[in-house]
Length: 215
Image (cartoon, rainbow, N blue to C red; front, side):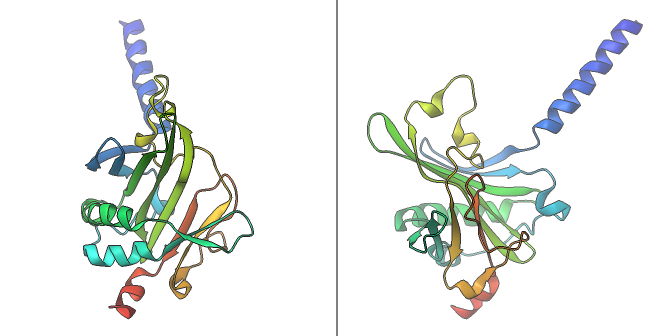
């Protein structure tokens, strides 16, 4: 009996440790298609332990205006900007982002994944997330049009990238900005955005002020 009790105790400890090592998991799929996913994902210790400001109510039109302002600057020194989301992507994602933010809890982040076929062997993958905290809307791009082998996402020995949208596939230097830049917020590390390779691109937006001024 003692050996059995010890075995059961070790099993419980093992399960607890496994749970602590995998704190992030998707709780609800808002959009679930072969090439596009929008989901809610539980994040351990969100926003420095303060929790996110969810749920949040926005209209589809407001989300469209916000997404249209998010821009990408590639590389460490480039100031050339490109839209982070195409018009087609904005039309697709906006209503699902709105629904996700309405359903999200203080511990859940909205994540997204999209892949497009270049040819029979290669795909382009874009993924990331968004959340509201401290009165600001944060948009995160973990991957932006990253070229991958079409078979790479189906490898049996690891979970699909569509279920790991915050994981970087091939980190590149660059950053996100928001136009007009007067509504951008300085991030906690002291810089607006990030140009460093190996760090997801992120921008914080005073979204309520922006929506009021552009209403």
